[in-house]
Length: 505
Image 1: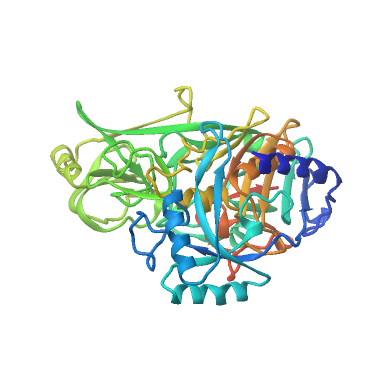
Image 2: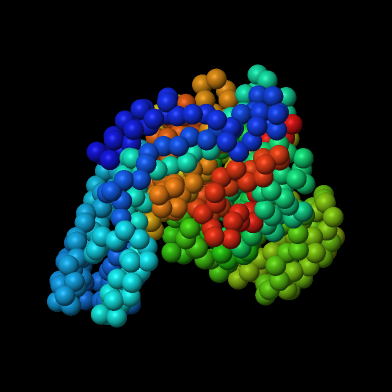
């Protein structure tokens, strides 16, 4: 907690004095009420260096040359450090602490093994080559990106929308079909938007969680995970946790539909409705599987996936136009396709017949179990984790699946604790919407933030409600007049995205 407290102090000192210069766009390029500023926080110092991070085996007696975990129990770290010393290296054992989250106490996440202090990445890479030649596995790390340095350099891009002056809307959009990706700059240009930011995770070109656009359910929920509801053209923003249930009825028989607009059998981020392996709880960036599923495809998806199983093609009223014993037929205009695999295929074939009727009902609920009306103008993006609720830092790391089940906490360490590029959305106490990008993975320029630091930053920026969006190499902000505002971390530049948040005049 010392590092987190230091970050709060650093932000309290730096933010009031940071310049709010429109570094990437002039006032004339943005509509009235929309401002863009860039904050420079922290600075590179002598305590920042490159090092070799030696991977640990999953078990205390596991092989060292194929080890793949970033951290582990102290007994495993001790064994690796001892083996390094026998080879003539001088390793360091470092304890990694997990900060307190809203649903998890602070504690020790694990131990890491490192060696060397190098001024450049090239020198660290050369040392890593020697370590690998000696029979170990590992990578290089820049210590300012460990997520615990409150003074690490950061470039923060803040787009504020003041609806007392702005007459347009803030909402989401995607390309010609949902099952595809587009760059943010292309979507800004195609829609006539003034500015935009990346939004939701996409896996196999499908939304990674609940996605409601203009009241239409286009992606099913990672059950109980955080999300943000946008209504009234962006003038109202609510952060909450959401579940969704989609039911298929044939006469008196009914069955739950497992997903909407995604590949049958693959549940990215887990948190499905039943039968998923290895868990039914949210696990960010983990693919769960289910051999028996029903998945609904809407016209927004594009061309449905092909494969074994069964499918029923429905018109806009739910009348069954065709029943097929393989999957992949085009979606009827205005209708839908119900695909099934495994045992669910047998249910569909037994209950669907051409000329008959299948009824689909949808229900989205908030964390209190209240039904969320899917009215026109309602958008819900399930992203996460939650960052700020009611003006206070509130990160549900366990409920949002940021902490891995099981012994291997490599993902938790790399994604949750370590510094990464981040994108966020929030609203302040004056009702101004904030879209924020923090650049990262760029040594000496902008290191990025851990999730706890990201929440603190949004609070310091004035957010009373805030949510984390997709990040990493997907973090991008653009305006119509200037193009890309920030520095995406991928060497190839901006990524192609599934959906985005746009500010439209």
